[in-house]
Length: 264
Image (cartoon, rainbow, N blue to C red; front, side):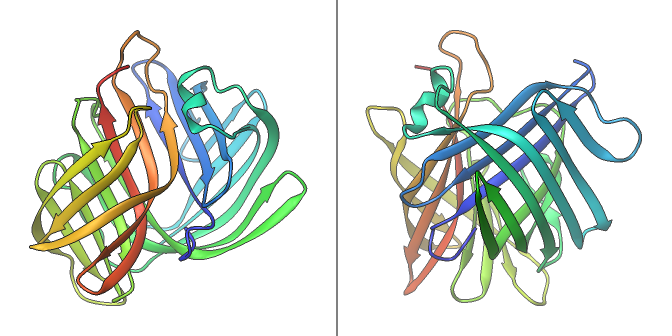
């Protein structure tokens, strides 16, 4: 994620051994950009300890270089560019586009429990290259890594947010009321309280939000949306991720927010 909102993305590798499959997501978004999607819910589980997956038009790998400190990720895939992000809920019809990643992830603070789930998270810096069609995009920005296990959250009204602020701190907050603030470059994460209100537009996407962390109120404005279909059942809950700008207490920040809303 760059500090101006021009380019951001996320990768998720979910191992689902009871179903004998893995889920792989790679989404690229940004201000005035089409949403680019690589999503496969029928990838073979990785064999051995290497987190490498393959599928039709997909090769991806995430590698732990140093535990809790340094990860790398690679991707060669055929994606689809959506000028309307809500097409994610209507079959993901768009313009085919090759997407590649060659990125390094390095922690900037200690890992801490997520609070509402079994797992942990920590902020980072991210650098490397994104290959989008014929273009090579240099990345030098901030990021986040989380590792969780157990059932996937699909309850209506659930949300979480991760953000980096210009005062040198980062935050994780969730609908359970728990939050963590991270002093980047040193110090231990601090547990604080949080709450949020979200306004949803008629098309089902978040229009605005207010996030309160440790009595500091942040105005949250979505800049680019990344809806993710996680269930094909009629009126299934919808997972919505959005690149957002944050402003409050004389500071600004950028981050990702995630909501589960009732099905449409």
